[in-house]
Image (tube, rainbow, N blue to C red; front, side, top):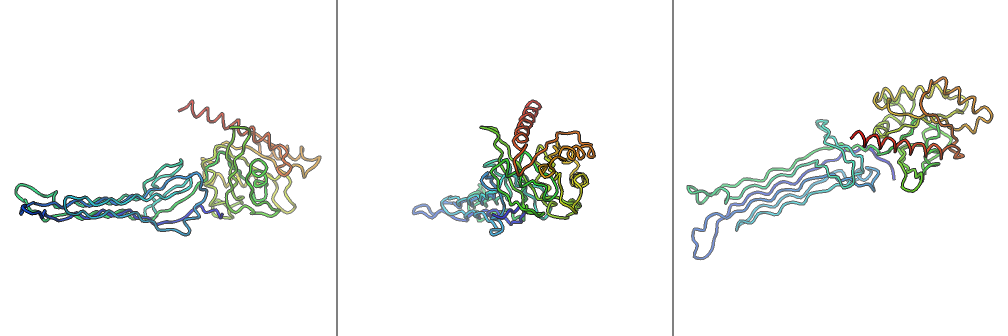
Length: 343
């Protein structure tokens, strides 16, 4: 299914039903008084989180959503039936913004979590409500209030523990396919990844994490160049970034060091906070360098003045990937403990 991470929809909550003007008409009770009931409330519109969804593609077809209106009141003090709430299922990680004002209404991040996006109208009052000692036959009623109408911008941010960062063709898709069951498109040309891919990396029983592979970045991505600009936001929720570098770039392409510096600069321009996140260096395709692998790897590390963790792998041959996945799992568990102790 095609990945869709942004879509605009229109939602309308149900209107409240009108109040009723009615009088009792029963045998032997000529002046029974008012008995008009209230109108029912309309239905609200909620977004509901569903973990089984991973795209907003369904909203490319259905873009308008309307909850039920409340029914009007009736005689014998009968209140009108309230409209049913409308529940719209969305993937976890969906952020909702009102299109007209830019106001962020909230995010849906948990299974079955509900987010109210359009409030229902209230039912009007029947004439029974206006009866008094001085007005025993009121003909007054109030209409129901209209439900909210909104144009919403839905934006999906994938929920992943680890994000892969790097130039096109650095081997990110090969890496995620090597450590998980994800099967993204892999080819020997740039931009084979056109949308984010998620993979669950199972280190052992009951120990796993989610890894996200986003389209490769190029210089100028923060300004809209290439494919990565609209997907950089998918790294916002990650706790660890893996900067994947092609240690054996093909002839005519940028040097590994200059490419790595360009990506780091784009990350900082997009989000200084994201640029400060924990980042590990992953030197990929070392198998292509043969005996020169260690020398070239050390050159890249020295020229980047890299002080964080460094892993030397061949994603294609799955060399070093098991150790990398295990160490990531251990680090994520450490972060979980730090978060629980700091809470």
